[in-house]
Image 1 (cartoon, rainbow, N blue to C red):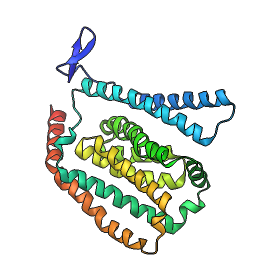
Image 2 (image 1 turned 60 degrees about the vertical axis):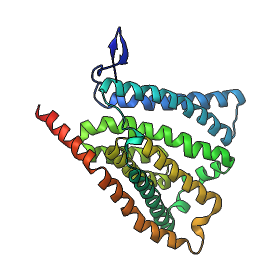
Image 3 (image 1 turned 45 degrees about the horizontal axis):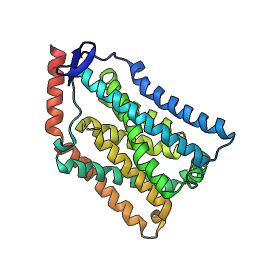
Image 4 (image 1 turned 90 degrees about the horizontal axis):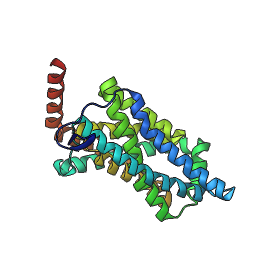
Length: 279
């Protein structure tokens, strides 16, 4: 942790309190959209017209710049609040297994449900999005979908936004509101429904563990599954229904593991919170 020395934050005690409200939470989003706007405008102005692949590449560069800015803001918030993000090594191994297992299983379930209802086929915006992404190479798809997108989106929604909403609305309302905004962020029904369901799980895991790295890895794993299905078509195999039955069994198992392994930490958090409110 840091403290103020000569106007700068140095290692030591907490430096103060962050300003409350949604306005400070909007700053990372402003940075994100501003960087993307600059990147896309630069490509368009330099060539007049740009292919979807070129636009996505420009967005990837903007994502890298956004991650650098987010790391700085995240570090500063931790220092001012006087709190530290839970260390990845401090979590029991079963928590990692349960979280990753639950995210994969829940993704598979919702993917099957939406496919059975024909939602992707009826969603013109999603079909256009899928067609655009097919223009990219597999390597570029992997970089964007399993690295850049999970990092930037988890910082935005489970990092900055969720942390601001919890003191204002309570954990439950904050989880659902952040998941709803996460769904709107994706811009189409198919991804929006999936993002809302997964946003709830990711926010819950973030609050239970206090480790942002875990939702990032869960998000990356889900995007990797989506990419695998798109490239191989494995979800449409005749025996694919067995995978969905298995996921229905594994989803509650994974969630239960996370819940059980984080009970002590959660109880201690609530005790400290109640003591702080009483004082």
